[in-house]
Image 1 (cartoon, rainbow, N blue to C red):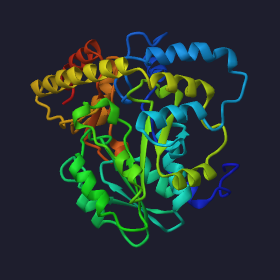
Image 2 (image 1 turned 45 degrees about the vertical axis):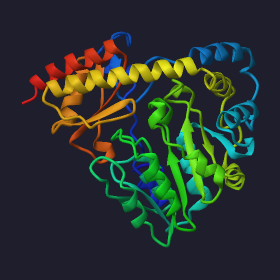
Image 3 (image 1 turned 180 degrees about the horizontal axis):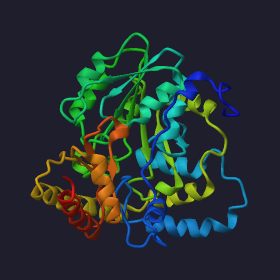
Length: 371
């Protein structure tokens, strides 16, 4: 009998924790390798260019001060983000990636029995957050692999407090455009907070990026925009993200935020990365060319990948788990999507050209070995 059996809160004991992508070290151990050299990781939507060079320089400079607690209010980083978006610093809050903000939003706005609305085939953490606060997660049907914002509005109930739109969406990689988002915000019922989870927005081409910050600035509807430095700026290992919202919303979130939630190293790196436009341009170029390389290669193998705009591609494969296992044997890590409610799909991140070529070569071999 477990020492803690029966002691935990019932709804916590029933929670299924988020399953992250497999780290390189775990795969190396499984394959009996002494190092991670030669393993290609395309499982977690990371930026395979590595961190922003300006961020790396800032981290090296910050090392001698790591014995000190960080600035609890992230003053300089908040000021930098505020300047970048043309908002007041009191409209910015920093957190441990975007995920912490999702938890804080539920903590601040939702009571037991309330409803959270999102799309099916969207980021699984939304369901986990709702369950954590003993709330209901209503998943609106998609139109194919893209959010149906009309269906999301129709799914809102009198007890709905949050409606979350992941744009671009993980794991489908699709985007809802500016006109659809504007119409959605205009029709948002009173008493509902619209959260736009935009972890991948900076990675897509500027001409198709969607501006939700204008709705934050307007202050006509309760809108929160979430961004992160994990993807576009290559700082996933530092876990730093931010929320943009009206000052009263930021004040509420700060009341439930833990102190010192963003490390000093993360603050220094993110502030430097924010000014590294050259790195962003290089990242977009790598992804634009890499998506084309992967899409063409998969289609040549008879697969039908979902048209994507971000740094990952979803494709159907009936024996997804088996395919992922065969690829792992060939030192290529991808993500089967059972945990996202898509058992017949695999997601592959876009890497550098040589990594993409390795994946396509391994994919052809793995498919050939699966009956």
